[in-house]
Image (cartoon, rainbow, N blue to C red; front, side, top):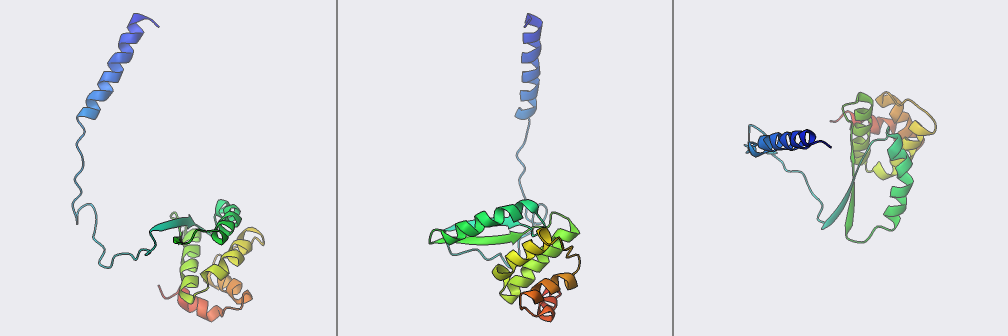
Length: 154
């Protein structure tokens, strides 16, 4: 490398550092940058918590499901496992997130995980409407009307 190249490199490095030195920390203010929740989210009483962010429509989540099921059978005592469905702004994924919460409301979320993954990824059902999803619940012996009532309740 030539002497000019070395000086040019050092000059570019120093010009970047000058910008970093001028940076100011952002002081967050309630009401402007964030809102305090009127009812704080419930957290687990467990000192350790494993959280899985998933979607029934996600092919990677479907592939990972056997690993999760296996781990749950050997999960250490005192460790809480929580699933949180995500939508990532996709209407079809948000539909399935609402489905998870409706199943949770009915107390059948764990029972419905495998059938919902299977319906989407193995049977290739579109499950594009709450009524189509209700059919999967009915196949598992859960009232379609109960599912639709829970689904539409929020």
